[in-house]
Length: 319
Image 1 (cartoon, rainbow, N blue to C red):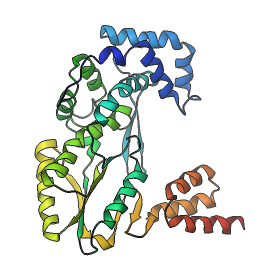
Image 2 (image 1 turned 90 degrees about the vertical axis):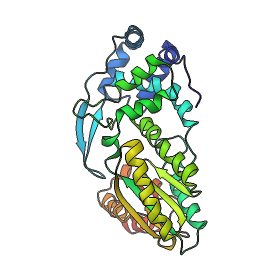
Image 3 (image 1 turned 90 degrees about the horizontal axis):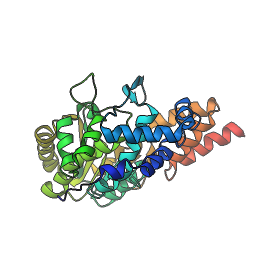
Image 4 (image 1 turned 120 degrees about the vertical axis):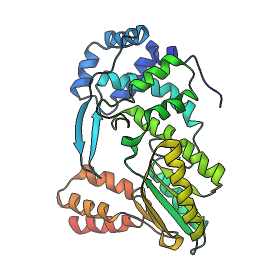
């Protein structure tokens, strides 16, 4: 793999830091931390540029909090100035790594979100016979289990700029754990894609699976026999354990005709519905007149048969 160098100055030039600030403030201009940063914008950008250049820069402590949807997670919220630095790195390295990802890799990737993953899933189902099988796997506590040494090696395999790699590693660490990366960092989203890219290439090239899709740590192989699915489970478990130090949370093997529950949709060859939990949340949002939540859930359900159900609920509410 060709390695790329001479990126440090490009990442932390005054122009790129200013562009990173514009990216970081999107949708957040009313926040106190953004307002404070903007009050001395020029000097704050220059301070970041200078401190990064002379090696004195260090991220500020995270603000930690817990969310419970869809499941309990600890979120590490970085200081706004550190968000700017992450955006400065992301703007330069994202296209470099994105070019190495397979098309079926989805999640926090441009034009490869939940709707793209869902569309591919239904297309893949339609390529298979009803009596064929799929195998769906999910990684246990993925972000909290990432081996930072392995992640560093994967980054160094592509980036030979030592100073930039050192900066990137600053946003991997979690003081309260020897493994894992912080959920809440912009760069963690890219790190997750980088970390599981070897799995994608292993399944596509070494295993030879043509129909395959992954969204973050949830992935599916389509169109295999029952015996092949059982064998694939063992092969993938061994690869995850030995190469990436990861373990499975769950594994489902079922016939194609039963469809799959993936990226928030219950998907079949000729039918796509949102999950039952989402339908419950929609009814609750209608009852509470939560227009913001309704707009979001209507957007999620676009292109599914659930839209007719949502529309009927709204008609009864307004009728």
